[in-house]
Amino acid sequence: MRKEVITDKEAICILIIFIIGSTLILGIGGDAKNDRWVSGVIGLVLAIPFLLIYARIQTIFQGRDIFDILIILLGKIGGRFVAVIYIWYGFHLGAMVIRNFGEFVNVVVMPETPMFVLMVTIGAVAIMAVKLGIEVIGRTCAYLLPILIVIVIIVQFLGIPEMRTNHIKPFFSSTITSVLDGAFSSFAFPFAESVVFLGVFFTLKTKKSPYRVYFYGVFLAGLLIIAVTIRNILILGPLGTSLYFPSHVAVSRISIGDFLQRIEVSVAFVFGVAALIKISICLFVTAKGVAKVCNLNDYRSVVIQLGLLMVYFAQFIYKDIMTMSNWAFKIYPFYALPFQAILPVFIWIMAEIKKNKITAKKQIA
Image (spheres, rainbow, N blue to C red):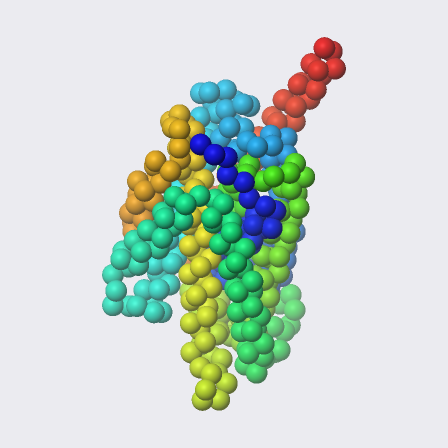
């Protein structure tokens, strides 16, 4: 099978779209109220050390994905066991994003359409994308990202007449506990979700690329998310914390005379594209992991089955939209901590020990 390769530019574009994924529509910061943007900034800063760890792991084992790395460090049995844990995380994360998409479209666009039909639709497109390969996904993201950024910037400017500065004041009015809880939530969702790319960035061309890609990708995505969060606060004020889809409601209030209305469609487009890419990346990593654990020659042979299972699982993952929102901001940060922080630190330490042993043997020889 031909080795797939993506450029740094494509990798950064994939990472940015992945990070904004369902975040632009669900928001960040939890219960930090008008200090949600502060929680976002703190969450982004908290993620930096772990981004360096992800990049270091990828640099030590250049050209290897997380599943190869685990088998090298922990052996065939131990490595496969931990690999299954990351396969589950990729699978579960993809199912959550599918459900986010289904709930959003069902609530604000097509309330009469069965949600399962909506989820099957985006799942089928994600399956086709993964079957085409990571190179196609990378090139697609490189074309789509400028369009998404232009849409976000235009909507930001169009929203200025609806913004009220008193909504964001006073600064730091929330309790420190609320801000830190929001920061922890923002760290886990979405910034530290970039751990998934340990199963993707083995396709990068050069050894130093991971540091540049992780930093620029997450930093630029963070700027977009924080800017949109500030816009939502300025337009909605305290109301924003009680809404399931604050970005959609904020943009729906924007209208320029009688000729420019209903621009919330732009939000739906951005969310649809970002959700599709995020689902595709999760499905790609899950399929790569299953292929490695089961010694399959090509990950594409299991993409359809895993994609359909992901959609089916998304149907039952939450009871309703209230459960989905509570999970995203209250439970998920603790659930994701082992995948995003604890295991990567353990893998990094093991990788450094392995590297030092190999270097010492070479010097002795």
